[in-house]
View 1 (cartoon, rainbow, N blue to C red):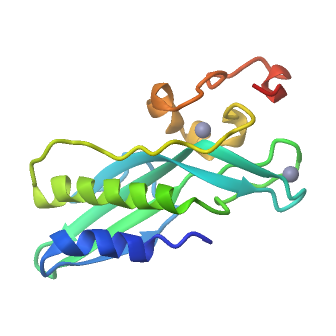
View 2: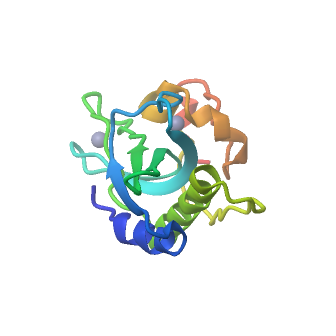
Length: 183
Ligand SMILES: [Zn+2]
Ligand SMILES: [Zn+2]
């Protein structure tokens, strides 16, 4: 993936991890609510740009869902975060494949990693503090979210956060054909 989350994750977690060692792994096989015993789950929406490998079209999205599964082994002091970014595909190309985000703005990665570490502190270290998550302004989007072209929608993950996202018009499925209209 073109976006490097690792150094930002490490610089956020180090302060709180004590002698624990954390690693962040991308794993496209993880599924919502299938984290298994001893693992915690955190789901967060972020913003990114996608690109079609067939027609080179680029589209920004403010509904990019990320699932994290986290586990801390208190004996080995090894912490593991598995991350899955739900992919999107081009709506113009009939043969389009699901694409990973091509890039993310630095402040969106910063906020995502900061929020992840807050969640780890709560769930893996049982810290108690008021939950104020960073939610930076999104990117400018030209079209509504396209449920048929979004892995998160297909998996049912996008819906949980739909009311929060900016510019939500048209999210719950506009009649086909009108969805291409510029809003
Ligand atoms: Zn395309
Ligand atoms: Zn979606």
